[in-house]
Length: 138
Image (cartoon, rainbow, N blue to C red; front, side, top):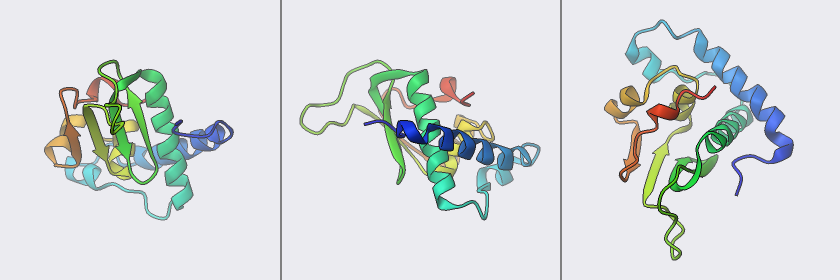
């Protein structure tokens, strides 16, 4: 299943751009402040579209069946080459779960994978549990 419907791609692009602009104002802040950043007042549907569009970008950047990236409640994609899902449970051997604010900070380059991982904000199971080479998304 696609991360975003084709007719919503332009909405997602605008939403991710809004999130990125909100994050840009915080780039010079200390790590603790950047790790806590979450734009207040942004509508829920904007967050959802930003997540879905950014997952779409990730999926296009690194297609494959080997790693599932989940950003609940708004989307999940499978990326990178590797073993496909177990036919009985459809979950690949590598799974990464992130909250939407964590994912968008990473996607927009406000924080780095290692910073979020060290702060305990990334749940990753499997050999390919580091997406730092794919982030931030351009």
